[in-house]
Length: 466
Image (cartoon, rainbow, N blue to C red; front, side, top):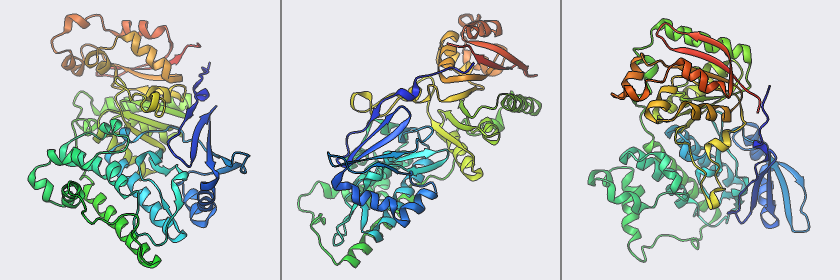
Protein backbone atom coordinates (compact mmCIF):
# COMPACT_ATOMS: atom_id res chain seq x y z
CA UNK A 1 0.00 0.00 0.00
CA UNK A 2 2.83 2.39 -0.75
CA UNK A 3 1.58 5.58 -2.37
CA UNK A 4 3.13 6.86 -5.56
CA UNK A 5 4.02 10.52 -5.73
CA UNK A 6 5.21 12.64 -8.67
CA UNK A 7 8.01 14.31 -6.66
CA UNK A 8 10.80 13.07 -8.92
CA UNK A 9 9.19 14.60 -12.00
CA UNK A 10 9.96 18.14 -10.79
CA UNK A 11 11.89 20.27 -13.25
CA UNK A 12 14.31 22.54 -11.38
CA UNK A 13 16.96 24.65 -13.05
CA UNK A 14 19.54 27.31 -12.20
CA UNK A 15 20.65 29.99 -14.62
CA UNK A 16 22.66 32.67 -12.76
CA UNK A 17 26.14 31.19 -13.30
CA UNK A 18 27.82 32.19 -16.61
CA UNK A 19 29.85 28.96 -16.41
CA UNK A 20 26.81 26.79 -17.01
CA UNK A 21 23.59 25.61 -15.46
CA UNK A 22 22.19 22.90 -13.21
CA UNK A 23 18.86 21.14 -13.55
CA UNK A 24 17.06 18.33 -11.80
CA UNK A 25 15.13 16.06 -14.11
CA UNK A 26 13.23 12.96 -13.04
CA UNK A 27 15.34 12.60 -9.91
CA UNK A 28 18.66 13.17 -11.72
CA UNK A 29 20.96 16.13 -11.08
CA UNK A 30 22.51 17.27 -14.37
CA UNK A 31 25.05 20.06 -14.86
CA UNK A 32 26.06 21.74 -18.10
CA UNK A 33 29.49 23.40 -18.31
CA UNK A 34 30.51 25.84 -21.01
CA UNK A 35 33.72 25.06 -22.88
CA UNK A 36 35.82 27.92 -21.51
CA UNK A 37 35.17 26.85 -17.91
CA UNK A 38 35.32 23.07 -18.27
CA UNK A 39 39.10 22.63 -18.11
CA UNK A 40 39.61 24.31 -14.75
CA UNK A 41 36.52 22.75 -13.16
CA UNK A 42 37.17 19.20 -14.36
CA UNK A 43 40.90 19.59 -13.75
CA UNK A 44 40.11 20.16 -10.09
CA UNK A 45 37.53 17.36 -9.93
CA UNK A 46 40.05 14.88 -11.35
CA UNK A 47 42.97 16.12 -9.27
CA UNK A 48 44.25 14.41 -6.15
CA UNK A 49 42.76 17.19 -4.02
CA UNK A 50 39.37 16.93 -5.74
CA UNK A 51 39.28 13.16 -5.40
CA UNK A 52 40.27 13.41 -1.73
CA UNK A 53 37.51 15.91 -1.06
CA UNK A 54 34.92 13.80 -2.89
CA UNK A 55 35.95 10.57 -1.16
CA UNK A 56 35.67 12.29 2.24
CA UNK A 57 32.13 13.40 1.42
CA UNK A 58 32.97 17.09 1.60
CA UNK A 59 32.61 17.61 -2.17
CA UNK A 60 29.82 16.30 -4.37
CA UNK A 61 30.85 13.47 -6.71
CA UNK A 62 30.90 14.25 -10.42
CA UNK A 63 30.42 11.95 -13.41
CA UNK A 64 31.17 13.17 -16.94
CA UNK A 65 28.31 11.99 -19.16
CA UNK A 66 29.48 13.48 -22.45
CA UNK A 67 32.41 15.36 -23.87
CA UNK A 68 31.90 18.75 -25.43
CA UNK A 69 29.02 18.81 -27.88
CA UNK A 70 28.52 21.05 -30.89
CA UNK A 71 27.60 23.94 -28.64
CA UNK A 72 30.86 23.59 -26.75
CA UNK A 73 29.17 22.29 -23.60
CA UNK A 74 29.88 19.32 -21.38
CA UNK A 75 27.19 17.36 -19.54
CA UNK A 76 27.90 16.16 -15.99
CA UNK A 77 25.86 14.34 -13.37
CA UNK A 78 25.92 14.51 -9.57
CA UNK A 79 24.31 12.19 -7.03
CA UNK A 80 21.19 13.65 -5.50
CA UNK A 81 21.49 14.92 -1.93
CA UNK A 82 18.60 13.25 -0.12
CA UNK A 83 16.96 16.41 1.21
CA UNK A 84 18.26 19.77 -0.03
CA UNK A 85 18.02 22.57 2.50
CA UNK A 86 18.66 26.28 2.29
CA UNK A 87 20.72 28.58 4.54
CA UNK A 88 17.60 30.19 5.98
CA UNK A 89 16.72 26.77 7.45
CA UNK A 90 20.10 26.19 9.14
CA UNK A 91 21.17 26.49 12.74
CA UNK A 92 24.06 28.84 13.67
CA UNK A 93 26.36 25.84 13.92
CA UNK A 94 25.39 24.60 10.46
CA UNK A 95 25.96 28.10 9.09
CA UNK A 96 29.44 28.18 10.63
CA UNK A 97 30.25 24.67 9.37
CA UNK A 98 29.29 25.68 5.82
CA UNK A 99 31.54 28.74 6.08
CA UNK A 100 34.45 26.63 7.38
CA UNK A 101 33.97 24.22 4.48
CA UNK A 102 34.10 27.09 1.98
CA UNK A 103 37.32 28.50 3.47
CA UNK A 104 38.91 25.03 3.63
CA UNK A 105 38.19 24.40 -0.04
CA UNK A 106 39.42 27.81 -1.12
CA UNK A 107 42.68 27.29 0.75
CA UNK A 108 43.19 23.83 -0.74
CA UNK A 109 42.66 25.23 -4.25
CA UNK A 110 45.48 27.79 -4.02
CA UNK A 111 48.43 25.39 -4.65
CA UNK A 112 46.70 24.25 -7.86
CA UNK A 113 46.46 27.77 -9.21
CA UNK A 114 42.71 27.78 -8.63
CA UNK A 115 40.29 29.76 -6.51
CA UNK A 116 36.57 30.05 -5.77
CA UNK A 117 34.99 32.74 -7.90
CA UNK A 118 32.08 33.07 -5.47
CA UNK A 119 31.50 32.30 -1.80
CA UNK A 120 27.90 31.91 -0.72
CA UNK A 121 26.07 29.46 1.56
CA UNK A 122 24.00 28.46 -1.48
CA UNK A 123 27.07 26.51 -2.70
CA UNK A 124 26.63 24.12 0.23
CA UNK A 125 24.05 21.45 1.05
CA UNK A 126 23.81 19.19 4.09
CA UNK A 127 23.89 15.42 3.80
CA UNK A 128 22.58 14.46 7.22
CA UNK A 129 24.57 16.62 9.66
CA UNK A 130 27.56 17.07 7.30
CA UNK A 131 28.06 20.01 4.91
CA UNK A 132 28.87 19.16 1.28
CA UNK A 133 30.21 21.64 -1.28
CA UNK A 134 28.06 21.11 -4.38
CA UNK A 135 28.80 23.95 -6.82
CA UNK A 136 31.88 22.71 -8.64
CA UNK A 137 31.45 25.42 -11.28
CA UNK A 138 32.56 27.92 -8.62
CA UNK A 139 36.14 26.73 -9.19
CA UNK A 140 38.16 28.79 -11.67
CA UNK A 141 41.73 29.58 -12.68
CA UNK A 142 43.47 32.12 -10.45
CA UNK A 143 45.64 34.99 -11.60
CA UNK A 144 48.92 33.92 -9.91
CA UNK A 145 50.06 37.54 -9.49
CA UNK A 146 46.88 38.83 -7.86
CA UNK A 147 46.59 38.81 -4.04
CA UNK A 148 42.89 39.66 -4.24
CA UNK A 149 40.13 37.11 -3.61
CA UNK A 150 37.26 38.64 -5.53
CA UNK A 151 34.74 36.60 -3.53
CA UNK A 152 35.94 38.13 -0.23
CA UNK A 153 33.14 40.67 -0.03
CA UNK A 154 30.51 38.10 -0.89
CA UNK A 155 31.78 35.78 1.85
CA UNK A 156 31.44 38.66 4.31
CA UNK A 157 27.96 39.60 3.08
CA UNK A 158 26.52 36.10 2.93
CA UNK A 159 28.30 34.26 5.75
CA UNK A 160 29.70 36.69 8.31
CA UNK A 161 27.19 39.54 8.37
CA UNK A 162 24.15 37.26 8.90
CA UNK A 163 26.01 35.60 11.79
CA UNK A 164 26.92 39.02 13.17
CA UNK A 165 23.31 40.20 12.91
CA UNK A 166 22.19 37.04 14.69
CA UNK A 167 24.73 37.37 17.50
CA UNK A 168 24.63 41.11 18.15
CA UNK A 169 21.16 42.16 16.99
CA UNK A 170 19.12 39.00 17.47
CA UNK A 171 18.03 38.92 13.82
CA UNK A 172 17.07 35.35 12.88
CA UNK A 173 19.20 33.64 10.28
CA UNK A 174 15.94 32.85 8.50
CA UNK A 175 15.75 36.54 7.54
CA UNK A 176 18.43 35.79 4.94
CA UNK A 177 15.64 34.31 2.82
CA UNK A 178 15.06 37.85 1.55
CA UNK A 179 18.78 38.57 1.09
CA UNK A 180 20.03 36.39 -1.77
CA UNK A 181 23.42 38.11 -1.85
CA UNK A 182 23.64 38.76 1.87
CA UNK A 183 23.56 41.87 4.05
CA UNK A 184 25.19 45.18 3.21
CA UNK A 185 27.29 46.97 5.82
CA UNK A 186 24.69 49.72 5.97
CA UNK A 187 22.05 47.16 6.95
CA UNK A 188 23.81 46.49 10.27
CA UNK A 189 25.75 49.64 11.13
CA UNK A 190 22.84 51.90 12.25
CA UNK A 191 21.51 49.22 14.59
CA UNK A 192 24.77 48.54 16.42
CA UNK A 193 25.56 50.26 19.69
CA UNK A 194 28.70 52.39 19.92
CA UNK A 195 30.36 49.66 21.97
CA UNK A 196 29.45 47.00 19.40
CA UNK A 197 30.70 49.12 16.50
CA UNK A 198 34.16 49.54 17.97
CA UNK A 199 34.67 46.14 19.58
CA UNK A 200 36.23 43.19 17.82
CA UNK A 201 35.33 41.76 15.34
CA UNK A 202 32.69 44.35 14.36
CA UNK A 203 35.24 47.16 14.21
CA UNK A 204 37.10 45.60 11.27
CA UNK A 205 34.16 43.67 9.85
CA UNK A 206 31.53 46.45 9.73
CA UNK A 207 32.50 49.84 11.17
CA UNK A 208 35.76 50.70 9.39
CA UNK A 209 34.65 49.28 6.00
CA UNK A 210 31.34 51.13 6.31
CA UNK A 211 33.06 54.45 7.06
CA UNK A 212 35.58 53.93 4.24
CA UNK A 213 32.76 53.01 1.88
CA UNK A 214 31.43 56.54 2.19
CA UNK A 215 34.69 58.06 1.00
CA UNK A 216 35.97 58.13 -2.55
CA UNK A 217 39.51 57.09 -3.40
CA UNK A 218 40.15 55.19 -0.21
CA UNK A 219 43.17 53.46 -1.70
CA UNK A 220 41.72 50.00 -1.27
CA UNK A 221 43.54 47.56 -3.55
CA UNK A 222 41.59 46.55 -6.63
CA UNK A 223 41.92 43.62 -9.02
CA UNK A 224 44.76 45.38 -10.86
CA UNK A 225 47.22 45.05 -7.96
CA UNK A 226 50.16 42.83 -8.99
CA UNK A 227 52.68 40.96 -6.82
CA UNK A 228 55.04 38.05 -7.27
CA UNK A 229 53.14 34.72 -7.32
CA UNK A 230 54.64 33.54 -4.02
CA UNK A 231 53.76 36.76 -2.22
CA UNK A 232 50.29 36.89 -3.80
CA UNK A 233 49.55 33.36 -2.63
CA UNK A 234 50.76 34.12 0.89
CA UNK A 235 48.61 37.26 1.04
CA UNK A 236 45.60 35.21 -0.03
CA UNK A 237 46.31 32.66 2.70
CA UNK A 238 46.64 35.41 5.29
CA UNK A 239 43.34 36.93 4.18
CA UNK A 240 41.60 33.57 4.43
CA UNK A 241 43.00 33.18 7.95
CA UNK A 242 41.59 36.58 8.90
CA UNK A 243 38.16 35.54 7.63
CA UNK A 244 38.40 32.35 9.64
CA UNK A 245 39.34 34.34 12.74
CA UNK A 246 36.30 36.59 12.27
CA UNK A 247 34.10 33.54 11.76
CA UNK A 248 35.29 32.01 15.05
CA UNK A 249 34.72 35.31 16.85
CA UNK A 250 31.11 35.28 15.64
CA UNK A 251 30.48 31.72 16.78
CA UNK A 252 27.97 31.72 19.59
CA UNK A 253 28.45 30.12 22.95
CA UNK A 254 25.87 27.41 23.38
CA UNK A 255 22.84 28.63 25.27
CA UNK A 256 19.44 27.25 26.04
CA UNK A 257 16.04 28.42 24.89
CA UNK A 258 12.62 27.60 26.27
CA UNK A 259 12.40 24.50 24.08
CA UNK A 260 16.01 23.28 23.96
CA UNK A 261 15.70 21.88 27.52
CA UNK A 262 12.11 20.72 27.11
CA UNK A 263 12.93 17.01 27.25
CA UNK A 264 14.61 17.44 30.65
CA UNK A 265 12.10 19.87 32.17
CA UNK A 266 8.70 18.61 30.92
CA UNK A 267 6.91 18.08 34.25
CA UNK A 268 3.79 16.63 32.59
CA UNK A 269 5.87 13.58 31.63
CA UNK A 270 7.02 11.14 34.28
CA UNK A 271 10.07 8.96 33.76
CA UNK A 272 7.65 6.08 33.19
CA UNK A 273 5.76 8.04 30.52
CA UNK A 274 9.00 8.97 28.75
CA UNK A 275 10.10 5.34 28.74
CA UNK A 276 6.72 4.10 27.52
CA UNK A 277 6.65 6.66 24.70
CA UNK A 278 10.15 5.82 23.56
CA UNK A 279 9.37 2.10 23.74
CA UNK A 280 6.23 2.55 21.61
CA UNK A 281 8.11 4.55 18.97
CA UNK A 282 10.98 2.07 18.92
CA UNK A 283 8.62 -0.93 18.59
CA UNK A 284 6.67 0.75 15.79
CA UNK A 285 9.82 1.64 13.88
CA UNK A 286 11.08 -1.94 14.25
CA UNK A 287 7.73 -3.15 12.93
CA UNK A 288 7.52 -0.79 9.95
CA UNK A 289 11.25 -0.39 9.14
CA UNK A 290 11.04 2.95 7.31
CA UNK A 291 14.10 3.95 5.34
CA UNK A 292 13.28 7.65 5.58
CA UNK A 293 11.61 9.54 8.43
CA UNK A 294 10.35 13.11 8.77
CA UNK A 295 10.26 14.13 12.44
CA UNK A 296 7.97 17.16 12.83
CA UNK A 297 8.35 19.15 16.05
CA UNK A 298 11.53 17.17 16.64
CA UNK A 299 12.80 19.39 19.48
CA UNK A 300 16.31 18.22 20.43
CA UNK A 301 15.95 14.96 18.52
CA UNK A 302 15.18 12.22 21.07
CA UNK A 303 12.96 10.35 18.61
CA UNK A 304 15.05 11.32 15.59
CA UNK A 305 17.96 9.47 17.20
CA UNK A 306 15.82 6.39 17.82
CA UNK A 307 14.82 6.34 14.14
CA UNK A 308 18.37 6.94 12.95
CA UNK A 309 19.80 4.26 15.24
CA UNK A 310 17.40 1.80 13.60
CA UNK A 311 18.70 2.59 10.12
CA UNK A 312 16.45 5.44 8.94
CA UNK A 313 17.60 8.63 7.29
CA UNK A 314 15.92 11.44 9.25
CA UNK A 315 14.98 15.03 8.54
CA UNK A 316 14.13 16.70 11.86
CA UNK A 317 12.07 19.89 11.70
CA UNK A 318 11.57 22.30 14.59
CA UNK A 319 10.94 26.03 14.81
CA UNK A 320 13.33 26.55 17.75
CA UNK A 321 16.86 27.25 16.51
CA UNK A 322 18.57 26.26 19.77
CA UNK A 323 16.71 22.93 19.98
CA UNK A 324 17.77 22.24 16.37
CA UNK A 325 21.32 23.25 17.22
CA UNK A 326 21.49 20.66 20.00
CA UNK A 327 20.02 18.06 17.66
CA UNK A 328 22.57 18.89 14.95
CA UNK A 329 25.56 18.79 17.32
CA UNK A 330 24.45 15.46 18.78
CA UNK A 331 23.93 14.00 15.30
CA UNK A 332 27.39 15.17 14.29
CA UNK A 333 29.03 13.77 17.41
CA UNK A 334 27.25 10.42 17.08
CA UNK A 335 27.59 10.28 13.27
CA UNK A 336 23.86 9.77 12.83
CA UNK A 337 22.06 10.46 9.53
CA UNK A 338 19.91 13.25 10.99
CA UNK A 339 19.44 16.56 9.22
CA UNK A 340 17.87 19.20 11.48
CA UNK A 341 15.99 22.09 9.86
CA UNK A 342 14.82 25.28 11.53
CA UNK A 343 11.29 25.62 10.17
CA UNK A 344 7.70 25.91 11.31
CA UNK A 345 5.46 23.31 9.70
CA UNK A 346 2.46 25.61 10.24
CA UNK A 347 4.27 28.34 8.27
CA UNK A 348 6.61 26.30 6.09
CA UNK A 349 9.50 27.77 4.15
CA UNK A 350 8.09 29.23 0.92
CA UNK A 351 9.40 28.94 -2.61
CA UNK A 352 11.59 31.94 -3.45
CA UNK A 353 13.74 33.33 -6.23
CA UNK A 354 13.01 34.15 -9.84
CA UNK A 355 9.40 33.17 -10.60
CA UNK A 356 9.41 31.36 -7.24
CA UNK A 357 11.28 28.52 -8.94
CA UNK A 358 14.92 28.80 -7.80
CA UNK A 359 14.33 27.47 -4.27
CA UNK A 360 11.53 25.02 -3.65
CA UNK A 361 9.19 25.30 -0.70
CA UNK A 362 9.67 22.96 2.24
CA UNK A 363 6.43 21.12 1.48
CA UNK A 364 7.37 20.61 -2.18
CA UNK A 365 10.74 19.17 -1.18
CA UNK A 366 9.14 16.93 1.45
CA UNK A 367 6.32 15.64 -0.75
CA UNK A 368 6.77 11.95 -1.41
CA UNK A 369 10.20 11.72 0.22
CA UNK A 370 9.40 9.94 3.49
CA UNK A 371 8.25 6.43 4.36
CA UNK A 372 7.18 7.63 7.79
CA UNK A 373 6.24 10.92 9.45
CA UNK A 374 6.43 11.38 13.22
CA UNK A 375 4.29 14.12 14.83
CA UNK A 376 4.89 13.73 18.55
CA UNK A 377 3.79 16.47 20.95
CA UNK A 378 2.74 18.61 17.98
CA UNK A 379 -1.01 18.27 17.49
CA UNK A 380 -2.13 20.65 20.27
CA UNK A 381 0.21 23.36 18.96
CA UNK A 382 -1.25 23.10 15.46
CA UNK A 383 -4.82 22.99 16.77
CA UNK A 384 -4.66 25.73 19.41
CA UNK A 385 -1.68 27.99 18.71
CA UNK A 386 -1.98 27.92 14.92
CA UNK A 387 -5.75 27.27 14.83
CA UNK A 388 -5.52 24.64 12.10
CA UNK A 389 -8.55 22.30 11.90
CA UNK A 390 -8.08 18.55 12.40
CA UNK A 391 -9.05 17.78 8.82
CA UNK A 392 -6.40 20.13 7.45
CA UNK A 393 -3.73 18.56 9.66
CA UNK A 394 -4.76 15.10 8.44
CA UNK A 395 -4.45 16.22 4.82
CA UNK A 396 -0.99 17.67 5.43
CA UNK A 397 0.24 14.47 7.06
CA UNK A 398 -1.16 12.43 4.18
CA UNK A 399 0.62 14.76 1.75
CA UNK A 400 3.95 14.24 3.53
CA UNK A 401 4.07 10.51 4.25
CA UNK A 402 4.35 7.69 1.77
CA UNK A 403 2.86 5.22 4.20
CA UNK A 404 3.26 5.52 7.97
CA UNK A 405 2.33 8.17 10.52
CA UNK A 406 3.25 8.05 14.21
CA UNK A 407 1.18 10.68 15.97
CA UNK A 408 0.52 11.69 19.57
CA UNK A 409 -2.98 12.78 20.62
CA UNK A 410 -3.05 15.24 23.53
CA UNK A 411 -6.41 15.28 25.38
CA UNK A 412 -8.19 18.39 26.65
CA UNK A 413 -7.34 17.47 30.27
CA UNK A 414 -3.59 17.65 29.54
CA UNK A 415 -1.91 20.62 31.31
CA UNK A 416 -0.20 21.75 28.11
CA UNK A 417 -3.50 21.59 26.22
CA UNK A 418 -5.12 23.74 28.92
CA UNK A 419 -2.22 26.16 28.86
CA UNK A 420 -2.69 26.74 25.13
CA UNK A 421 -6.48 27.08 25.43
CA UNK A 422 -6.14 30.43 27.21
CA UNK A 423 -9.75 30.54 28.25
CA UNK A 424 -11.15 29.46 24.90
CA UNK A 425 -12.51 26.17 26.26
CA UNK A 426 -15.94 26.58 24.66
CA UNK A 427 -14.41 27.02 21.19
CA UNK A 428 -12.47 23.77 21.36
CA UNK A 429 -14.81 21.61 23.43
CA UNK A 430 -15.31 19.35 20.40
CA UNK A 431 -11.65 18.30 20.29
CA UNK A 432 -11.38 14.78 21.66
CA UNK A 433 -9.92 11.47 20.60
CA UNK A 434 -13.07 10.49 18.75
CA UNK A 435 -12.98 13.68 16.69
CA UNK A 436 -9.29 13.10 15.99
CA UNK A 437 -9.86 9.54 14.76
CA UNK A 438 -12.81 10.62 12.66
CA UNK A 439 -10.85 13.40 10.95
CA UNK A 440 -7.80 11.22 10.31
CA UNK A 441 -9.91 8.22 9.34
CA UNK A 442 -10.61 9.66 5.91
CA UNK A 443 -6.91 9.53 5.02
CA UNK A 444 -5.47 6.90 7.39
CA UNK A 445 -6.20 3.47 8.84
CA UNK A 446 -5.51 2.96 12.53
CA UNK A 447 -2.98 0.18 13.14
CA UNK A 448 -1.87 0.54 16.77
CA UNK A 449 -2.96 2.55 19.81
CA UNK A 450 -0.63 3.13 22.77
CA UNK A 451 -2.06 5.01 25.78
CA UNK A 452 0.27 6.63 28.29
CA UNK A 453 -0.45 7.01 32.00
CA UNK A 454 -0.49 10.81 31.68
CA UNK A 455 -3.53 10.56 29.38
CA UNK A 456 -1.77 11.11 26.09
CA UNK A 457 -2.24 8.49 23.38
CA UNK A 458 0.18 7.35 20.69
CA UNK A 459 -1.04 6.00 17.36
CA UNK A 460 0.45 4.23 14.39
CA UNK A 461 -1.61 5.08 11.32
CA UNK A 462 -1.25 3.85 7.75
CA UNK A 463 -2.02 6.13 4.82
CA UNK A 464 -4.91 5.05 2.63
CA UNK A 465 -4.16 4.47 -1.04
CA UNK A 466 -4.82 7.50 -3.24
